[in-house]
Picture 1 (cartoon, helix red, strand yellow):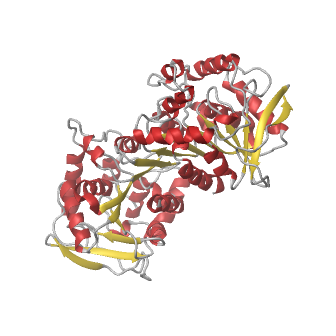
Picture 2: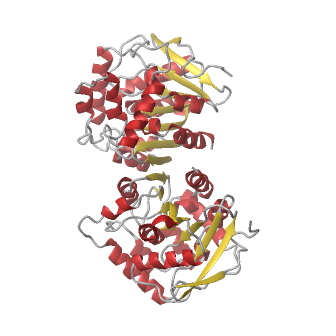
Picture 3: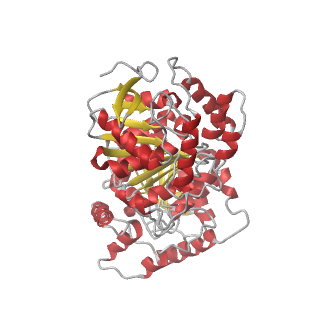
Length: 278
Length: 278
């Protein structure tokens, strides 16, 4: 049992695939740990301590930077298959033989790739604010938000993760405060990471024949979580994920967007704990 | 505190609107009771004791037959507005000033009408396997199932409430067993009820301008629950309900249909209890 939490867990390093992966690990040891996969341009510091510490009450939480991201060495690949393979190498380098995985946004694409390639390595999956290969991004405002200028710059994440209602933005400001409580922080991601992640998204959303068929192969129990009005990855894609995966449950929260779990951290931790414990 | 449960609670009667309403009431008294609204052609005996007794651990559960249905007197109206008004009269006749309401299928339409007409009477709402005014029923197999012959006749409900997978039908058979444990049973509904409920559905689904606008007026916290593949009311309508209601959460269960709460009674009771208690 570690006495560390989100804000105090030291950054550690492990080598695999020629990459030195930065990670943090905390929570109640002895069960199946949960490995968090981060969104576009995010580092370990972009998670919500209310979510990570909440889940850490009952299990070990492992945050990490994938290859090339922030304090991890190497290059960020330009496709999610390779990011999934790197994540698997990282998990195995920790000596783990079974984990749960959580992914938000493009981290959800990585989590799907981990499940597809990792076989028995993955026990359960939580997919937050995410979608599927070939998803229609016509309604996404991602390009608009990420090319705009915000003052302070952090307020980008209000547009990305929250809904433009008073109640949602208020929850967003509280999230940003929680996010900045940790003092020992990761460096921001490089231009190489930003470009490679963008290129990977382009490949992921490309239309293809029978593009949903791969979802039938992800047979692990899966919890899909989404906000009512995700401006980055349209909410309807979560219903498709739920429908096409053999064993997926969907929860959609009201008055919320891409980062719904940061708007309702306590309710999400309750729902996720029920799902992971069952 | 009543010592009765689903199978032992006596049928009681109360007069309102010139109708003698049959009802059963059991569970932990002292809080806000939850009033169940039944689906097409169903009586109080069509609920799942695993669901009703599960919720009754923490609150009072009230089952009833709406006007004209089974052991209640009067005629069944040919529209859901009137059914909602009758339900409100029934609830007030019990001396209650605040309730939660649960509705499945057309009972979900009645629950919406209770909320629209009842004002402060309704605290929270649970909508199961249901939809909204003007919903597209092209994909519904309702007419096919309800005009077919089943041997035994009870197996109609396997098609209506469950998915044609081994796992779902097995859960369906277990549900039918639970449903028949009660010996003191309601009479089946009359031809008048069947015809009136059918006519009411036709009016409910009729296209109209701005047909979803009414959902903005249902401001109570609402939990929308659905199966991945509802063959009666297409699952996508639950996403619309969630999106158009100001404060609605959606849960979709895997490998399931119209009666998803009968396939996962324990998980549903857990989710519903979190929602009702919060």
